[in-house]
Figure 1: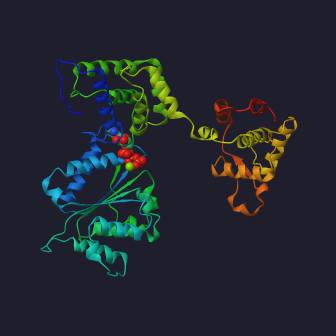
Figure 2 (figure 1 turned 60 degrees about the horizontal axis):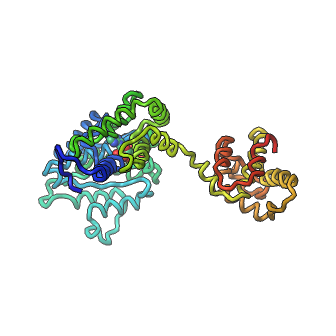
Figure 3 (figure 1 turned 90 degrees about the horizontal axis):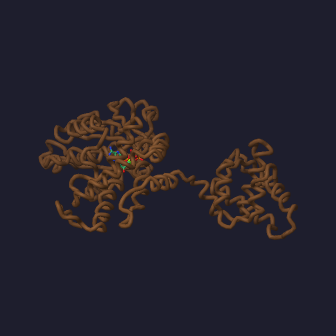
Length: 434
Ligand SMILES: Nc1ncnc2c1ncn2[C@@H]1O[C@H](COP(=O)(O)OP(=O)(O)OP(=O)(O)O)[C@@H](O)[C@H]1O
Ligand SMILES: [Mg+2]
């Protein structure tokens, strides 16, 4: 869709809505980096300067970006890299290696990936190296410029940095930090992690080679700031093609954010998480309810969207259970009531279930022991029940002690919504003691 600007002329509503969807899809689905990441200006400046020192001046460096999930660590790094690469010289020279602790699960795999990303597979060929340090040294040597006087700077990004600390002897970390401390080659090591205690995971010899530079992304947002952020995130930009539509939209968003019920919902979200990721999820759900017939967001949309955000994943799982599995969950709920949360075993659950069946004449719920066993196993697979002590796996299955990982309200809520749940089962669930 072309972004033509129609000053006095109006676009048809349908076209406006398409544009609205495009603007917000880019903003909320990580398709476009923000021009200036909000609220992290000082961190941005710090990281940019640090990486410039490597990319432009050939100094080595190491730094950790630390912050909770969804705080914007990856986004910050991407913005900084984008701004760094604006300089022609840097773009020509800087090499990048991106590793992720979830993908490169040991140092051998990591080394292979480094070789691949540096396009040195052919250079390495079938060479056999004695140690990790030797290989890394060879790779960095191979990157030297034609005249051998200087090396190209390399940026190593280690996402999920804490996972690399679990690798045997922390070899990769040791060697990268070691190079970053010596004049061997200009490299910058950037670790990204959500563990605040990450330094404690490092071995002494690794830790002593790290620069101890850390960039923290910890939010100290207040609620009014959060609400304002929601408003700006939902507002259309000045360059929106239809001025009148954008003005109306922004005015209606302002009203929306001042609505009492919306404020309550936002307060609840603010209390559970202040980050952009959760906020974007909420706003995306709100936007999905905008259409040509209803070209703005209403308080009810925010309420509905919020409900969807907060639906309990476990309660949702209950909807997929069979009636037998559901009955077992109810039996466990009763056992929990009677024995005040003490663990139980399958035999006890089965007995409880039988008590319910005895009171009924119908044979609809007659199940063989192996079927019950299977259902029990399925519940365990779903992690709705968990063995108290996994080391006691030798005990006979029926007698292994288990705990129910659901609470009352989750069970009752799920039962209300369970499609075609037999009334007697519902009543049984609601009765006080089995
Ligand atoms: N300052 C900001 N301005 C606009 N959007 C932001 C900002 N910070 C974060 N976001 C958005 O929030 C989402 C999560 O950010 P990001 O992926 O960078 O988090 P993260 O800290 O890397 O999380 P994780 O630890 O899970 O990797 C992204 O969609 C990002 O665009
Ligand atoms: Mg990330």
